Length: 108
Image 1 (tube, rainbow, N blue to C red):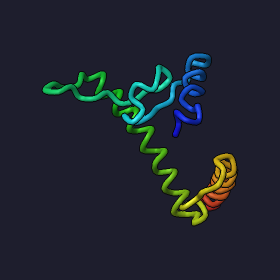
Image 2: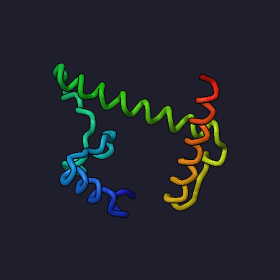
Image 3: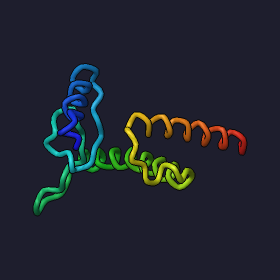
């Protein structure tokens, strides 16, 4: 889907022009230089300490994003099964984040 809609090309351009790579999972392996995915463990071998650290960083960022997605979907029923235009979903998610932020600020 990302290839079909030109998203991979756009993200590769952003990475080349601005130096901002996209962190992804192994499904985007060989998608281009603009994508950073975890390093696979070689057959019969081990990852170096640097490769293990790199994978931990990617997993850490990915985990925070997954938690945010889960929080939005469990808090706001409207975001569970959305079949709208992606730009519309972005507007709804942005509004939901504002509401979550207001809720969080009240409890401090």
